[in-house]
Image 1 (spheres, rainbow, N blue to C red):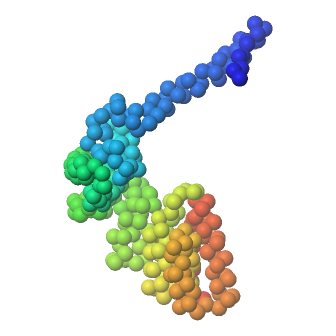
Image 2 (cartoon, rainbow, N blue to C red):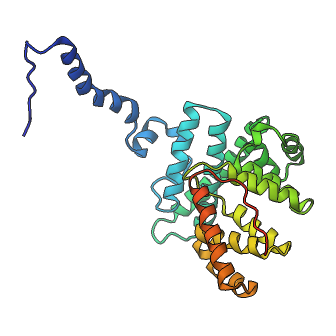
Length: 284
């Protein structure tokens, strides 16, 4: 049934304007957000973004779609941040293609050729994006270049130590990895600080929690190692075997375990709420 709205001539003018604004709002929103409703529509209007990829192939569909839309975002706003996202999306696509290219299609043999061509295209795209991002001063991109073996990027990144630009959990973790074999106490400081930078409902990098557990174990601070292992298991349930090993090796009394379990829950609550502050746990 179609409902028709009639406007009374007695309706106040400001109310009439408000109703008209509400009626036209969906049209305005659809014009802003639904310019391309499907990937196919996007590719029809922007063939250069899509044609080099293995279209109409069931392999790597998710990675391919993500890459296409990220390429479109980069085309619209060609910032270093968007290029970096495109680079990461291309690498995910490439990783999938390297596996898919080894699969022999059961029907159309040319599909394998298209996959290999798309794979070569991904290599070229990654090289191009790496070159375009070479001058970037974004610390995340600098760290990425360092992680790929760029020693100049390593010097650039370490020169930023203490700068507010590195006030991000992942960047503090990067510093911690640098110091882990040089200064254990500084490493612990950096790891705790990285946790304090998370906001409520952020996804916490499990490597931070696991490294805290390992370092405290190496320092023979079994209470702290026990707590951080429990926290690691909470955020990464597949880590349960390690928790069992810790329980068996620490030989804690029931009273000690109960007290440390309460500490564990308190820390998890502060992490979930984005209000973590360093908690020192000493063996009694």
